[in-house]
Image (cartoon, rainbow, N blue to C red):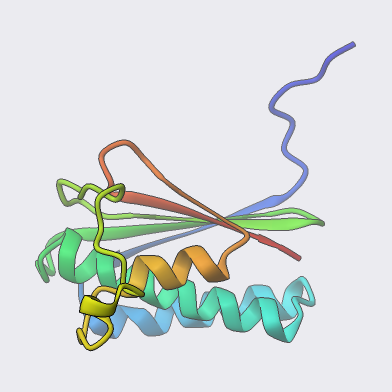
Length: 140
């Protein structure tokens, strides 16, 4: 007998205003979950880096620093993995056509490395079609 959509983990949600000060609430949740689920130091560091980057991108690029717009963060945790979803209220972006930050002409640019870094540190990185939601998977 096949079973579908049976939740065995926990879901945590934050709905935060698009202000840099909101980053503290996200960092507190990451630390809380790392303690609760005994997440290793390397995975914790990767999650902190990726989620900081995704959250700042959502505030700056997605919601254009509009404090009236929200960033929604979900953490779906089970025994083997944690899946973070960060969604902004912006129109999104074309994540398939980003400049390569490792190309010689881009090495000295001060910005443009965030998505590249997130893709390197998360076990899996998935954008929705519009580009205003990112899903980051980490094995724990």
